[in-house]
Image (cartoon, rainbow, N blue to C red; front, side, top):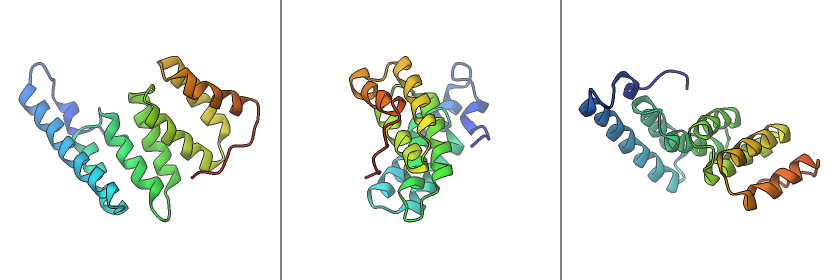
Length: 149
């Protein structure tokens, strides 16, 4: 996930058509990935999410789709899901859906300290305190994380 996408080759102000083409191609593959997720076709979802990222790695939704596909398949790739969701979180740290998905991966990996660090960052970025404050307090008190659903 460290390779820059095609969109980064263009400046939105001096090359708007090329930049928009990358954004649209990324959106197309994201839509295909979301539809595959709805059908529980995890391999196709991951394939399209990766294509979306090849076109546009500036949208959190593209990383989110990849993370979901990797974490929800029968043999989850939790390290891969973690990397994808952490990238989504970097782009949109106050998005509660991203926070929840990443918290779930940390929970499944048994990494409570990482979950607490992420929640502190999310709250500082503007995530709803009424939702994530109690979860952070629970993690910091050392309470046992519940099993993922």
